[in-house]
Image (cartoon, rainbow, N blue to C red; front, side, top):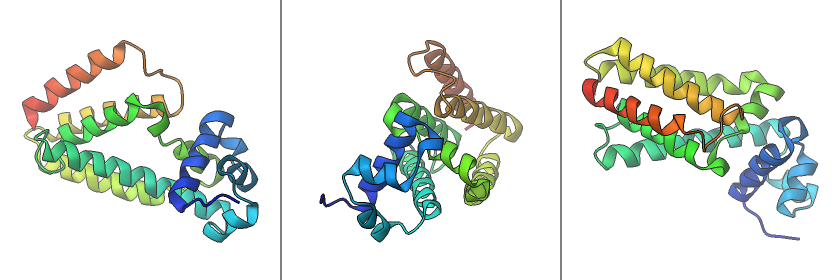
Length: 178
């Protein structure tokens, strides 16, 4: 039996969703993907819902970490729009880092998204409060989120040349209002 921690299980679950689709995310499939027995997996996650919740928490934590990194590097001030948009584009750049747990959560239990909705409301408030043009800031945030979800749901590909053009345009507009 392989020694796998919770982070490894979450990565394996994301792999299952990416490779097989959200409907094929089962505890058996995840156990197989990470080389654990089902009992070994159940030791860490008693239910599929608890696994999905952990997947969503990991995804939101990663976005928050990236936002903080971009803010610290001078892209925005603390959690402003520029840093948030850069974090989304960084996630979109790597197919493996895309949180396909969003698809699985919506398919399995939309109520799992409630904490994400609350966090998004807080982010929108922060972006508006830190911007000289709150409505334009929200429009830019929503545009970036739309591109992000297009990548998550697989309707847009990472190598689409429109990404770089839109990224540059969003960054320029953010600089004007941040």
